[in-house]
Length: 153
Image (tube, rainbow, N blue to C red; front, side):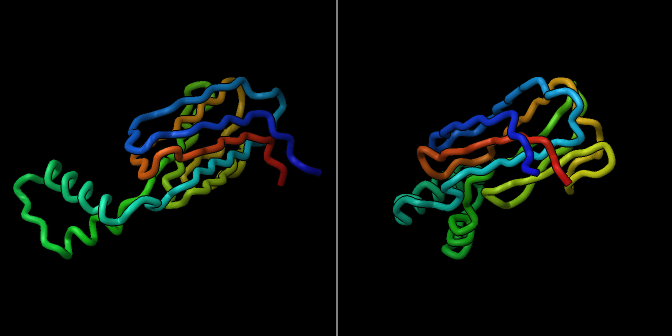
């Protein structure tokens, strides 16, 4: 038996966006558990490496003005850059946990007796609020989708 999807939202983020985006929905009654899927595209840099290197150098200079970056440090700083979006889940203002995973696809579940890593087992009920913590967006028009469905074991 396939799980029923009861909430889906899609969005597009501009390059350089940093902030929090919250989505709320009233959960269907009598849920045995909830499964959430969050997916975004363009995790890695998709533009010219040279233009990006200039941006990295400017960012590093602004964040650490006392630092004189070596070529190796700048190479490391540029190579480690990625789009990063984390997810937190609340049920009626109870924080059920957060997914801080280095991945463009995050999938997790919450039930009264078990939950994915980073989450606390609890009864999903009332108003579900999902907060996207957008820490860095490398590419313009980075699309994302958030889906909630009933968890089926």
